[in-house]
Length: 332
Image (cartoon, rainbow, N blue to C red):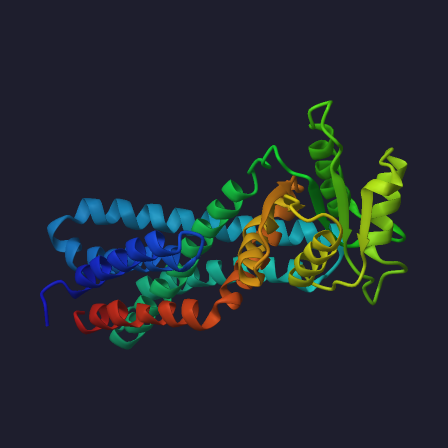
């Protein structure tokens, strides 16, 4: 076995990430591979660097623990705040549960340092590697979401597609209202002598809704002064993929040569872009602002959704973490 197998694994993962970034820069697989590389290198530093550079290893360990503690406390606090505000919804409870899981790993570390043990130590290495990798991957994904959610629309936009979200009674809820306001801002930014954009409002009627989201959005736009002939309703879709396919089909039937910009919430831009590529619709996606308290919970949900979209590839790649973990365990 090579003297430093974790480092070799890190180099292999980093090389794979570079290739993936070049061949498919929009895919999340590159981030997965780079996070595997960092985690593998971290295992190597923890296993081989303690004797040679104890001060460096101690500083890195404390920094990692403080980062994990901050992430765990932030998730728990955000989950509690949102549950108090909106009630015990599954997505909001998941946010708090994720924070508790991070804090539980730190508790496991504290117990290990108190009691020790060879078998316990093996478990701690594996759990810390998995938790560190997932935390790092989530932070990288949050960076993706933050950057992608602040893109600007192309100036030649002819149609603005507004993706539906939950209603508050028969009116757009806060999340959907922000999307509509962002769409209106895009329409108002047109050069005066250019024709106004056409708004395509997309969203069917949920089981708990009294009307379709498209109908509620159309009423909102009319109340804001948008002429009825510049509003197209797509009221059959029940998910983002259908939003995109059905809306583009409506435009293709009435406005060939159109250039569409999709408006959704900032946290949803990255996954919407991936779905647009997957269903083969050429659109640009921009984000509307989101309440800071809700952003973290929504980003965590998007993180799980993106992993599930390419689950065979991304989960399969993530399982490769077992290689550097095994070498670190056997080197103990």
